[in-house]
Image 1 (cartoon, one colour):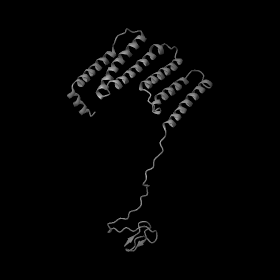
Image 2 (tube, one colour; image 1 turned 180 degrees about the vertical axis):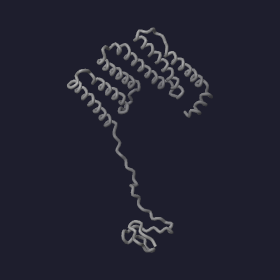
Image 3 (cartoon, one colour; image 1 turned 30 degrees about the vertical axis):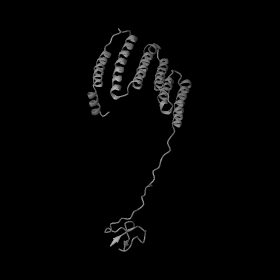
Image 4 (cartoon, helix red, strand yellow; image 1 turned 90 degrees about the vertical axis):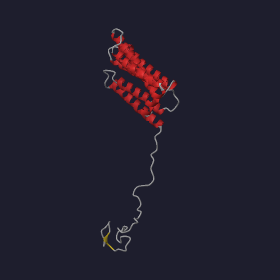
Length: 234
């Protein structure tokens, strides 16, 4: 005695389908199971990819609209300070940083880095309009931005022109880091009128010096270099 699994009507043993709802009858003693169609589609759907040009237009419109709206609010509604320069400068930096993702031409990396440094310096210059004076910009912010941009440009040049292996990149990084910290401390001391000497940057310089010496030792010994590469999986 069996019953339909769908409507529960009593079935005869010889039936293959339920006479009431046409549901296939599965007998437990049968080894072959009917091949029911899958309720899900077999084909894989594909969403149309968004072109980078459309994304660039959307980003440009969003950043431009934000800048214009904040500028108008600052001019017409809240004219007490130039607060809109913070938003306009931030939109400028976001657009500059996102530029390589939308431009697929062979624009050199050095051009992108120089453009980023220029955008950051311009943003700092906008901020200086909301401060009592601009001495901090010309004597501290601008030299630090120029120093960081020069460090990024030299780091990229070392990787592209000399070697891009993992150990060499580490060597370049710690060399650049030590020189950058020394330059930062000297610029800060010059701005504050303190004596031009090394304090905290000397500690960074000593630590980076030890790491650089260790990396040079590894690079000069082929067996040691290969052993490090095998253990670090690069």
